[in-house]
Length: 415
Image 1: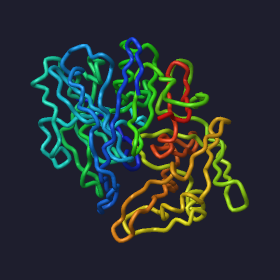
Image 2: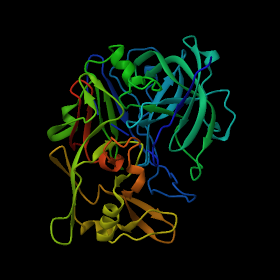
Image 3: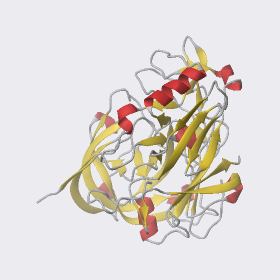
């Protein structure tokens, strides 16, 4: 009897990354920035930066040659979507994959997909791969951009010069674009959350396979998100001390038990503050979990808190856009501070806002604080409520996601 998996991938909007390190088997991924309009609603958002690659893609990684260092282009499309080049099959078929550290699922569109969500994207052809192994288990994925139906397939995945053999993934046979997303810049999805091995419906992702196949010196990945002016980087298996300043603060995961980390990268939330005087706000978040997510471009807070902060900012609504302020106001509004697992992490107004050119309004800076209300309530009543620290937060820090120590490390990035 054919088993069918229904995997609901809960994510909320769009969604990383990355320097240089020479470790024996670790991977360094470089990312020149490509800024592109990415509408969240049926309106074109001109982010205001022309996209260009600063260096060509390193073909050596896919030609079986030994590159001088483990480099790969990581394309960052605006500050909302973060993309890495990867390849599937033998010979390799190349895709631009959206990085998601909040989910563990992997997806590529199939050559047999004829629906709108696959149009304009390269498609995986299993008949052209000598390392393909049929699985055939039916699977449904519901992502923030696509609703996908397909089958589980097995093949070799290549990320830089790392080869992950016998990797299971979703081969999409149907892909429906969710309302409001008429264009998206990625072909595939590469999930990097700790695979929940305790759940029958979870499939180990490429990072979990790197760990089980002992491809890495250390069972972690580290990253520095790209900015408008600087490239980003992700490193599998190591940390580059030259990419951050000050102390790397290690926060214990709240879902780590022994050697098993399941579900997502999450830590204990303590408090949130905006400013320091009577004109500010300080909120107790004890009892909340903070979830990290590169696929979510904002920072989710309980509805009343987000609304209070936007009111203090003087944020105003613009049709088809999020709440925003004139960008010159960033020189006068205060920093915000998150307390996570007893440690304070501060963001400036230039980090928690996004500059956007808006027709008829000129340059505006979007507030990245997002009220999620009931969306933040967990699926199970025994789980704590949570906030989401998306790419708006992660851009302000160098981050290390460590399975060995069961921690997330944060420090200010060095560019």
